[in-house]
Length: 382
Image (cartoon, rainbow, N blue to C red):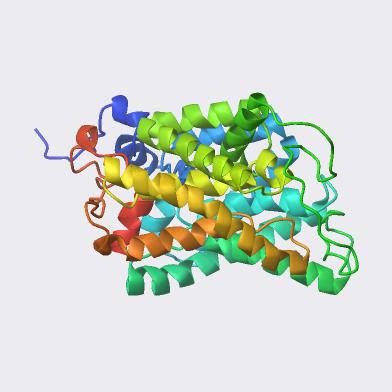
């Protein structure tokens, strides 16, 4: 009998569909095209800390279902950023975690909100170019922030690149910006209407419980800049596929931010469309279930930080308005989470999360805590 070696593939189990799916990664690594596709889908999922290609697939299909234009932009963005990282020879392990793809996917979705018109080849090209730049920015920030402070860049590349793109297009005096992306008129007084509404124009009326529930759910759908209750429900299912705890924290964080903003009398339009809830949801997920070991104290800290995120969001909006941006996107989340991550050793009763199992499947996947996402592991190993 010969001693020829044969590749032993891991069996198809529950791990192929849930958690960090190491078995699927091992199978896809044998086929470059499939490996690249899986990396892209992980990138889509990593928009919410979810390194699961099935979760990414569900989210991407949902975006296409709600808005084919946004679906095309997200697809172009994640492919452009993932391909850029591969062509430049960036760490393959990071690329397989989706760390370069998720900012590209978000940049594509953000381009749909800020750029016009729809289905324009120029807008698609701008989105692809901006997404490619996020891969470069992500690589640079990982070298600096992660190694120096142990703080991941999160969505900073997307926020920074989109803001620079808007400013550049304004200076070029081109017509590829939405009508509402314009600096405010200093002669016109700023009015704030706390009524929950889906248009910036002030309307008379009272808020209902249904409006508040929609505002909370819109905070989930805004993961990809969508204002859609059905999309939010599907996203929650996709998040729960990876971690039921993260799904619960997303809802609690969005609700905390919406409630705080409503009590403080924030502009009802920004609250209703979900950008306030988005920052709350991401902050609560990051602190309560990703970068700190899940516990009652870390969950409470995450909810408190989510409530405070609406204040930071509002303050940043005042700055962003100078350049005509309708909101500060998810910049509040990108600033709050690193601060808490750096100060975690000073907070009594909470500890840093343990590293996640490796891609090869080493480690007890079944007992891994939800905070053990690829983003957390990469933040500790870069």
